[in-house]
Length: 181
Image (cartoon, rainbow, N blue to C red; front, side):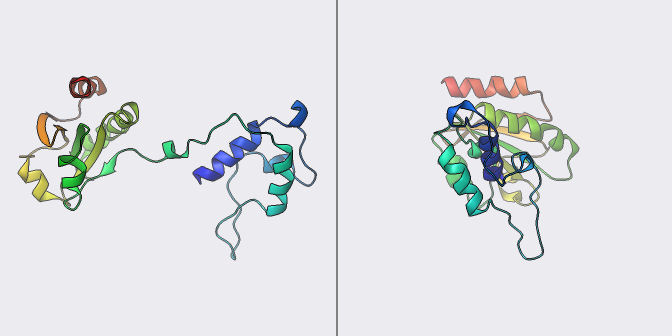
């Protein structure tokens, strides 16, 4: 879906040869607009027809737009007992770990904050989530008694913890201590 969206954005914004935004014959203006793909009983995936791509390709000079589909993927990864060692303990980058559960109201309040932090600090820290219902051993190892609890790890060691749904600035302050150090 993300690639299809990028293709359609490219088709809308890429400059035409000669600077004129004329469309190839046989392609209506509605095919340029983002819309839900039409599916039939026979095909569940819709892709541009080869003839439409051939008509578009020769008329398009190299685009100045770059596809950022990787940004469509959530940067917060799920940590569990299988990957805990490799994702958190063995990580060279600082790791922010949120302990949560699906039934927890404050956990749902802080989830968008963790997502924003993951995007703000991409490449500087790793952000993980641990479901305490699925991974009780990890939670008990670190003494998690209340959720949401956010732990900061650096060099495989727990450095700080924050309990409860706190504002983004509180977590940013903690992250900044370990990113700069």
